Image 1 (cartoon, one colour):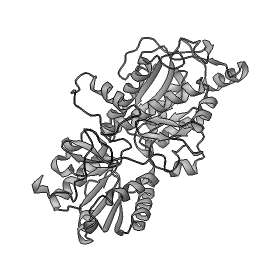
Image 2 (image 1 turned 60 degrees about the vertical axis):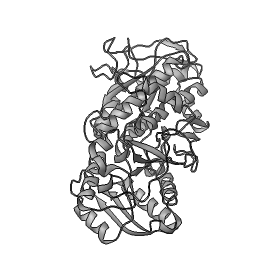
Image 3 (image 1 turned 90 degrees about the horizontal axis):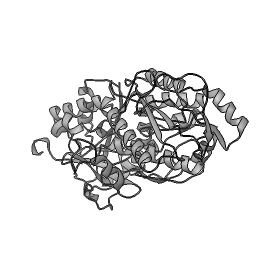
Image 4 (image 1 turned 180 degrees about the vertical axis):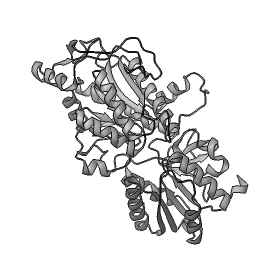
Length: 442
């Protein structure tokens, strides 16, 4: 099967008109990318070269709609990367089991980005070079997703990504092709105040401590958290930075104990978060509330942290216990996977990333074509309904402020259970346990 370059592909589209596209995709099974790298599928074809196969945008082509993605199968984000890949395979199956898109199957081609920004760029470029790619789906973590966004902007391909709360790239990089169906930092600030307000009026946490990663997103979150919580009547008594990859949190713990921090907020990578809560337990540092973004969203959080990780909170975009907008169908599909218990729930990152597939499906169906400009315009002018909720995108590719009120969860009984919104009744929703019980009582 042969392909043309992306620039030639768009020239061809312009020549023949919006009703016709060059519908070319790598002749590979789900997961292959033409370089011997595979995901859950197997290769059924060889390398691709030059040439085209044409068909109508509404389904005249029999070739699949091709989506390029990288995930972190290895490296510091590998735990989360496994969840992202699970979500993308669930989404791919959901779309194809319902008849595909525009009468065509969807093929998600995935490479390992090794939790490295350069590998993200290299992996996506390799897929794009060997296949007629229609869309990009992002990976995990703001730094890596921003790297993928650079590829999407250069190639002028629509990109969707969850796990990307960082607002600054949207605001400063003039994104035209990058869309994040995911709560952003400003939404997480709102969530932080809602969580604090669940505490009894006579025992609300006053002293706030922030441990921010020494990254752009860390600084952004530190600012958003400070502004939101101070406006809610709290006092930020500690706001310190630490390096991604840090293995010694003793100084931060000691500073927090001295400042009598009652509400801790931080955003470490998974490995750092696991180390931090273990050291907190060893030092006897027990804030009334501990919100640990990013790290406390992985499937293995409690397996890795034991009782130290119990009763921590997170705002991962999606939380077990949410209902409607495809949540029931996603849960059923997840439980139908080999080796998954009939009462199991997917990790938060699975739910958040599955919503990428839902957004893509609705965007392409509404556009009636995979032509990039048409899909982009649809993304800018459509209301989407996914497992995260209902939202529109603003001109910067972020959900309109206030559309996605971020759900929050607390780790209880081996599951991150929904505590915000507090009015949802489901098997996985619960009341917030506050203050956090003593370590010896867990």
